[in-house]
Every structure is written in structure tokens, then in C-alpha cells.
Image 1 (cartoon, rainbow over the protein chains, first blue to last red):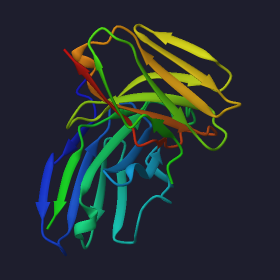
Image 2 (cartoon, rainbow over the protein chains, first blue to last red; image 1 turned 180 degrees about the vertical axis):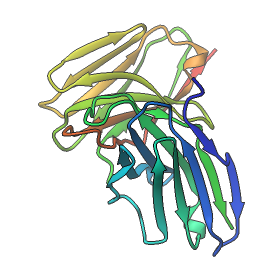
Image 3 (cartoon, rainbow over the protein chains, first blue to last red; image 1 turned 180 degrees about the horizontal axis):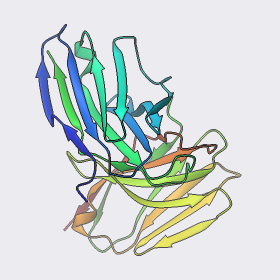
Length: 116
Length: 112
């Protein structure tokens, strides 16, 4: 199994530009999570999906952030327009079964975003 | 705000020694998990303990949970250089496949 796949691994962009991060969860997993990691705030949950449906987006910092999951094998996190304070490592994680909070979450390698 | 708070923030020990990390949390939980993150990599699940459990073992790992004190500890015995990483506790509140709330982590350095 290839694990959770994220692309790109690194992204450098200028303030005001649109950024799209992509995630392919592990096949058969029903839950998908987006996290952001910074030195100041640690790991923060942004949004999660169960069976492709957004369940909780209360962690999305601003309207500039949006996430979609058009099918079970693909999700995107978009920032438009991007700002320097959005610089962070963004992780996608998936989990096998919806409705089981005790399930292990499997993390992707992350996308390191730098907004100049 | 962070649910879990790890202590210490950084720990440096000699190879072969035991390493103990602590985690405190604020609200009721369904389970508590420990993850490891190597530099520049994603997180890897280590062990999960449920709220009705007090202790759990997995290889060289031992986790304890005290729900009355809202705290957990992770013990790594006979440490190895490869254990150098950041360790995070994460809590799940239950009621569905909810996201986890992570602490800021303990950075562990094993000196050869």
C-alpha cells in the first residue's frame, strides 16, 4: 500500500496567489483529515470528511481556506488568496472506518508551504 | 487551544536509558493516542489507550493513563538512536471518527 499521498511536497508562492494542496487517502479509508503544523501553534485540525462529506470545518482559520472531497480517493485544500502567515506544513491523514474515533490515523508526508 | 500538553518540551538522554514523556489534557476523552514524528516526515501512530484502560504495552513502549488526573505518560525503554524524534499525544473525544487534538510534542534526542 502506498500510504497517504500528498502533493506537492514543497510549495513556494507569493502573497495573494492561489494555492491548492492535494491528497489521496489510503484506498478503502472512509475518513480524511487536514491538519496544519506550525512552530507556534503546533498541530491543528482544519477540517475532516466522513464518506466524502465535510463533518467539521470549525478549524478552518478563515474564508480564504476551502476544502473539497469530490470522491473517495481525492481531496484538495485551497487557500485563496494566500498570506505569509499561512506558511506551515499541511498534513492530510486518513482513517479506516467512519464512526470509530479510536481508529488510527495514517498521515501523509505533508506539504511544506512558504508564502513570501 | 491545545488539548494535550506534553512535558518536557525537550529531552536528551544516552542510548540505552529509558525515556519518559508526560501528557496532560483538559476535557473528557474517549481515548488517547501517541504519535511519533521524525524530522521532516509525517506522524506515525505508536499506541492507543482507551479511557477505561490504565496501562498498555507495545514492544519497548509503555503507556499509562490516569483519567482522574487527566494525564498520560509514555515510557520508552532501552532507548536507541533511531528513537530520536518528536512525540505527540493526541486525544479523541469519541462519538464518531472525529479529528484528534494534539499537544505540542516532546522532542527526544538519544545520544549514542
